[in-house]
Image (cartoon, rainbow, N blue to C red; front, side, top):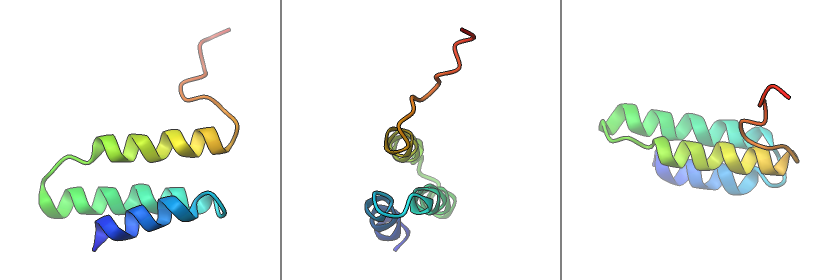
Length: 63
């Protein structure tokens, strides 16, 4: 169930950016419930959110 919700929230994030945060939360809950790492899925969502916002992940290079 958490996986389905995470994927749905990620898709909705294109229209409602706050849904990206919910998607990350659901991946975290799924990880806690199953003991399986979903770090890659969380990182993918965060990267998509960053791209949606027009920024770059890890853009703080000290320049």
